[in-house]
Length: 180
Image 1 (cartoon, rainbow, N blue to C red):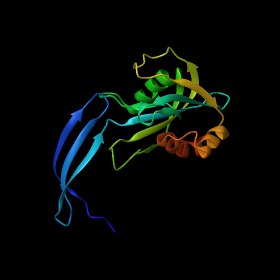
Image 2: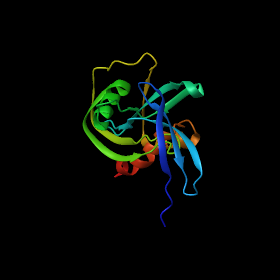
Image 3: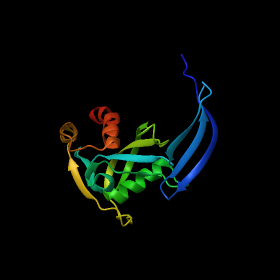
Image 4: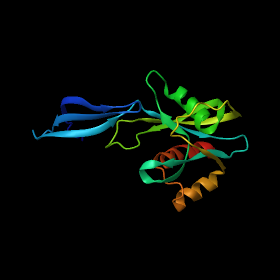
């Protein structure tokens, strides 16, 4: 059975910055009732699971302002206008992880918060890592790089130490490929 679709009446940009656009749509339900939908529109994002030659994984610890605490995450960033998801993955790996990859494999895609944003995150597994020239960072970005084994990532997710939803979703998509 197909669910009834909403019909868009109008769309407007309420606010735009360099990362996203806050949108407001007016719609009509199949019942005829009208409503408003507020959401964040982005160019998408790319997350990278960097795998060292010995099998350890690189994660970054960074401060997350909205929650006022540090967060252990896989490198990830928004796709800028004109860039591809793959190029964004390479740029973020250099910026956050200080690495370049000879092999970048698309492992899957997911929507981080489908009721709040239209963002589609492309997940990549990066192998053949080498030190790269550190990319220029935004003054709001400070990273601590950690090298963890797969079982340590699992344990830190189970304990709540890794709590970032995108990192957990990315790990769920990638771990079977990493274990193969």
